[in-house]
Length: 334
Ligand SMILES: Cc1cc2nc3c(=O)[nH]c(=O)nc-3n(C[C@H](O)[C@H](O)[C@H](O)COP(=O)(O)O)c2cc1C
Image (tube, rainbow, N blue to C red):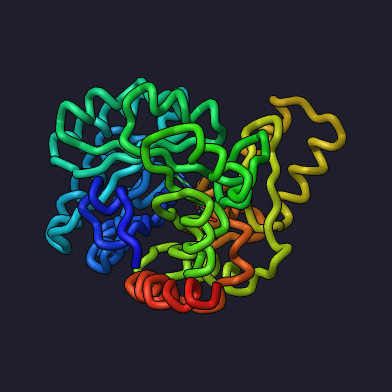
């Protein structure tokens, strides 16, 4: 199969990246993907066990250090760590997480939800490659100017936080590929070799998969969440939350109520209050309530639109093996 510049840049065999998913992308999954020739990623809250722990900077930092050390015992291949820059408290935590990751000697950083200027120089000075998440051509240009090594284009189909401007993967990837010189990675709606080949045809030099890796043996998502991914059909997800931050999740009571509030003109504060309420969630916030604690009715079950195509839980290496083996068949058919 075709080796792209991304393989050389990251020192990987196949240009397939396992996307970070908060809470559920830990050392075992990252190492399994890297051992299979892709790039595995440790997500935020990896190594953190409860909502209470996630508020304690020392535990978050310690958890990250532990996960990095664990990955290194499980693979000698490159892996990545995700840094969602975010806002408020998250920003303070990021300072600590970035310092810890540099100290532990990670090979690749994936930076999302914030300015590419914030950490790129620091990572580069430490010899760490930087992939930056973008949702528009403008952001991609800005990231390139800031010196990042590659951009990841997140299309509207993707699970979790997405761009409010709604550019889907098929629209975004070729325009970004035309606009920048650095390698472009396609994300959102990719789960098999057909999506892989299509992404490369659009000008991407790699693919980035979240939802497909949620339904793997090594992912520590709650069994209810994995089952919901298997049961999802082509219309199972919805992009919602224009006021408070748009994301794509499985449709459920929570998304229905949230959308009803928005449609009826509820204020930002009222919607925030509803998001943060949930006495029925056992102390979890909405996203971990679904993906960690398994409440897929009242939690925010972040999930990509491609879930309808995912019908079995398989080892992570099998996801990569199938994509690589089927790649040739797809190309031959074309
Ligand atoms: C459950 C879940 C949690 C996510 N958490 C994060 C996160 O912590 N940081 C981040 O940058 N992206 C996060 N994402 C987005 C993914 O990294 C990725 O962009 C997305 O899954 C790609 O689209 P796909 O699901 O169609 O493969 C999350 C996605 C899901 C489904």
